[in-house]
Image 1 (cartoon, rainbow, N blue to C red):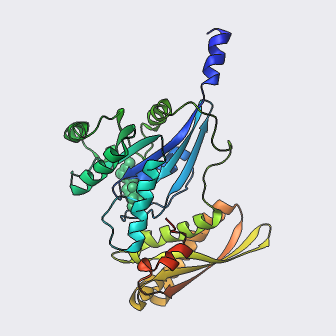
Image 2: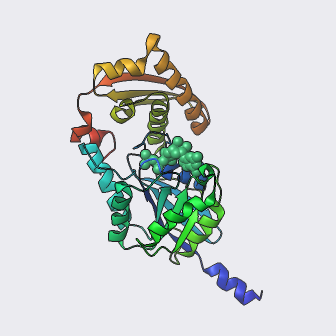
Image 3: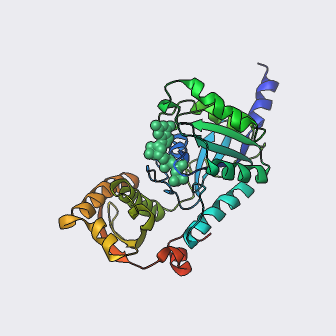
Length: 306
Ligand SMILES: Nc1nc2c(ncn2[C@@H]2O[C@H](COP(=O)(O)OP(=O)(O)OP(=O)(O)O)[C@@H](O)[C@H]2O)c(=O)[nH]1
Ligand SMILES: [Mg+2]
């Protein structure tokens, strides 16, 4: 390669925003964490885990990809869910490229049509990512799905992936980069996310609750950091409130002899200490706040302020 060619290539730096959208549980946040190489977003097998926009930044020699993880598309029943859905719509407006993530191990339903309509309305260039291919016995199972989606939109690429295992993610990143505009970097090279450490701490705790409870509990739970004391450079005391809607739900989260709350606290503390890089004391208390998902002032305080 001549020096001139080399210089031209070096000058072609690309950067832009890429929305990860799809139905709840499709694996958007798993993919975000996998691509950035660090745990940024809560993940669970319960739908509606992500409640707000989470940015993850990947900087490479040839460009910068700003991934925008969004809540899974669903029919909103509460003010909180309406905010979640406007987050998705806003994210679609502000990006250069859309990645529709689809759990390829489940059948097509009304929800898919709804997501498809959002992508179509955005009119943005889009990639279709067929996720969870590790769950398929035979890759030929993808063919009817690809056929369905091919009729719906003019996809730039269709890429089968496993977000969990990290299969095909290099191919995916190359394809994403190809469709971004030439631009200077949008964020500093060492920046990984737009989230504050406090938000990440609250999300770690909420994730542990989602992972250790069933039925309605994941949906009615919110976590707010109420006090943060940096006692020493290497020791932080963190006090968090866990909101639920009814006394019976409070009982479930606390558990027999406070066993469940203790378990949630231990799991969360280990991950928080890893994030902070030092030891911490974590204190959790459960508060009942009736119908908080419909109270705008509480949603604002919880940072669900779309
Ligand atoms: N087997 C398998 N499981 C996956 C894969 N990707 C994600 N999952 C699992 O799918 C579940 C949902 O993953 P999330 O990343 O939370 O899904 P999401 O799309 O962000 O969900 P919401 O935030 O609720 O919209 C979790 O249990 C993940 O471990 C994959 O490639 N293979
Ligand atoms: Mg998510």
